[in-house]
Length: 205
Ligand code: ITT
Image (cartoon, rainbow, N blue to C red; front, side, top):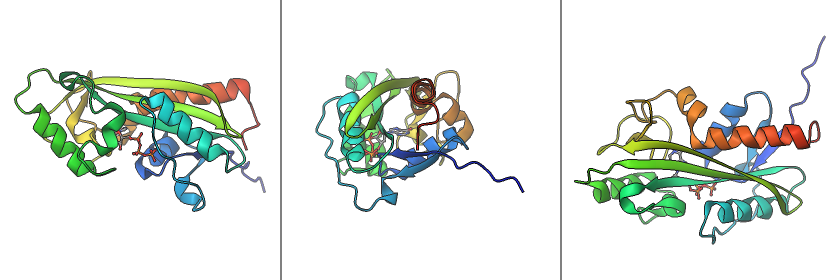
């Protein structure tokens, strides 16, 4: 009887289960994704950087000091034109409480009330690290506009308020497969996987 080859594992330095679920869905059978929730001993990494790259590097290097193999970190957020690029790297605590998406969305709706300039983009920076050292970084972004009230229950975070360019539904309304095809995270991840394939074929485990 034929046996399935063992999938290489990719450790993703995130405690946000939505991010790791999206990354696993995008990678399909290529890799088994293990996020920080699988490793209770992983340290909490303080995100003290002021850019996506600095924070992704802190997370990737910090976790890769504690585990064998490649570690991928994702730092991401929403940049709003009418707010001068805010919340940006502070997206996850914009509403006053780290990781509280309801409060984040409520503050965004408040700050955007009455504004006609609605342009925004999601950005994602990914860093691949091994043995405590960052080896490569990749950026992805997706342009769009903001609605004035939430629409849809899909995705996470600001997704119910964000309509990607070329569509008339929010990421909260569109199928997950659509988001995973064109998102900031998808665009960064495609580059990260190509880099691993080109530079470290068959040495991922
Ligand atoms: P980790 O640091 O553990 O990875 P986190 O959620 O705190 O988890 P970030 O510091 O990168 O991650 O902050 C990302 C925030 O940006 C996230 O909490 C959302 O508010 C927002 N965000 C990022 N990607 C998003 C997406 O695909 N859809 C909606 N909101 C997103």
